[in-house]
Every structure is written in C-alpha cells, then in structure tokens.
Image 1 (cartoon, rainbow, N blue to C red):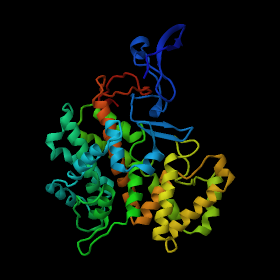
Image 2: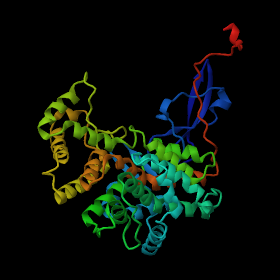
Image 3: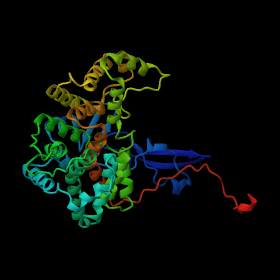
Length: 431
C-alpha cells in the first residue's frame, strides 16, 4: 500500500474535512476514514460492510469484473491445475511457493499431526447420532483449546505456528470422525503413507471389515475441491475469524467461530442447496419447467449453483472444478443416478439459454463441487464440513496476518441507533 497522494473531501453543513485516499497494489482506491469520528463526531453507515475495507491484506485478491482470483498473486486456475492443496497451504501461510525441501518438511509436519488426542473421541459420544456434522465440528474444534494448551498463546510466534499446523492437519480427521459418527461406523485413524486428500477419503469410506483403495482420480478431485475453497478474501466467515481474533481469543476458538458462520445457508451451504434443488427437479425431463420458473420474476424459485455475488462474468474456480466433475462422472457413471444426470443436463440447457447468458447466471464452483461430492458418495450434510476443512488454511492465514499486524485493535463496529431515547423507569404497579 503506497503513501497517500490524494485526498477526499467531506462537506457537512458548510464544514469541509480532508481524508487521505489509499492506493492498493490492485483494486479500487480506499478512503481512509479512521479519524472520521474523532474529527467530525460522525460515523459512516454501511450495513453488511459491502463498501468498507476492514483491513489491509497481502493474501488473496478478487476482481469480480474480470473473474480473477489470486492467492499471493498466483491465479487460482494455475494453482488448481499445477499445484496441490498442501503446497497452496504453504503459499497462503508463508507468502511464497516452497522449494522442494521446504515442501517436504511442511508436508511431513502436517502428516505427523493428523491424529487427534484420544480423549477427544469421547466428545463425539456426547452428541446425538442424528446431529449435523457441522454442529459436531463447531464443538470439537472449539474444544481443541482444552487439549492443546501449548499452542494457545497468540503472542508466541512458535505457538502460532504449531496451532496452524495442528488445525490444517487435524481438520480432515475431525470432519471424517463427524461423518463416521453420524452414520454409526467406527472411526478410521489417519495413515502417514497417504497424501492429504487420499487420507481424508480413506477416513470417510474405509471400514475395518475390508481394505479401502483410494482411486487417484477421486483423490485428485478431492484435492482440487480443497484447493479451490482454500481462501476467498474477506467473506463472512473470514471476517468472523478476524473479529474473534481481534479480542485475543485463542486460535481454536477463532476457527470454531469461522465454522459456525460458514454453516449458514447463505455462505457455506450453497453447494448443499444446489443438490437439494437437483433433487427437487428430480429427472432431466422436468428441467424446462424449472428453467421457466427461474425466468419468472413472480416465482420465488431460483437456480442454485448459478451466478455469484462477487464474480460478474464467470467464476474462475468453476472451470477447473468442471474438469474434475467430468472426470469423476466419467469414472463413476451417471446412468443410474438421476441427480447427476439431471445436473449434467441442467448445465447444458442453462448454458445454451440466452436469458442466463444475459443475466450472467453461469454455473459456479458450488454447482460443480456439489455434483462431485454427490458422485463420491457424500451426503449433502457433509458438503459444508468439507468446505470448512478446505477453508481452514485461509482462516488461519488471515488470523496470523492480523495477529502479526502491530496496528491491530479489537474490532468494534458502530451503529445507527433508531430505538427509544432516554426515559424514566416506571414501577410495575403504575404501568
């Protein structure tokens, strides 16, 4: 961020105030209003903070008009095609791609931290069997602070490092355990001879009665899902992690807060909503009916998994995800699965319809990731936990960046108060 070279003028009741304008390395200029209240006695009003930069960051940049997503400057399509999840984790955490020795060391450290404390297994039995996996993850991740006391001091750089590795390493184990618990199967321990994605698939689908061989195409697709969801700038859950961390909360509590926010259907539940929509459509022959409903402005029905709030032309993650979807569907076949057959046909018809092209309603990453996860055999209840697993490294990177910022202060949004003004208490017998 460069030093201010221009200013913005605010005029109120004939009084003018000057505020510096900051220029980022990419994206629009930002008016620095940190001294607004002290200078003018006024706040700004920005519900949902859609016009407010809450921090400066060097991690992720999105250009919605261009359909561009960069991690530390690297385009997401290059990372998803040429790299793999743990290398992207290193990039997000440390700011540069690792050399061979650095990558080997990082992967080794993550692999050796994948097991969870044995007593944590007891936490799962405290939940009902029909508990949502996200409810379990919020509780168990928050409880990590009760087991790993040696990595909760946010002022110690080494403890921050250990907590980061532990969270990245143990999140797949916790997510898989949540899944196994809800379907009544025994937990499967991680194995050090498997890569990150393969280990997760094995922990989810292996059973003691027989060996489980991970298909490399499925493992690659899973790794891409992790990579494409690793970070996405200052979204709701990331902002939640940052706000929680500004209070000095321990890292496990902060990530648990992020998981809780991600659970919302408007955020992490989009791919689940997409699959539920496909189930509602049912079969490919009903697609024209639902496309007509989507075009009807008086009908509340909307095509889930199409379009994006940030990306205005296309979702750069979706192109890579579609390649994986095609590979997985070809491997597993869709002839006997009406949901997946419906998804393929809906994609085809929507892309060929001028209405959707004009409205820029393109299939997004949630559409394709939901299709892949369904094909792999995951229930829709596991879609958001897998999203949380993927996003953990982004949350941690943002958390570390904020903690290491010498200018960090506790977050304290203001409000436009529209309630009652001061009034005197009235005794109950006189009301």
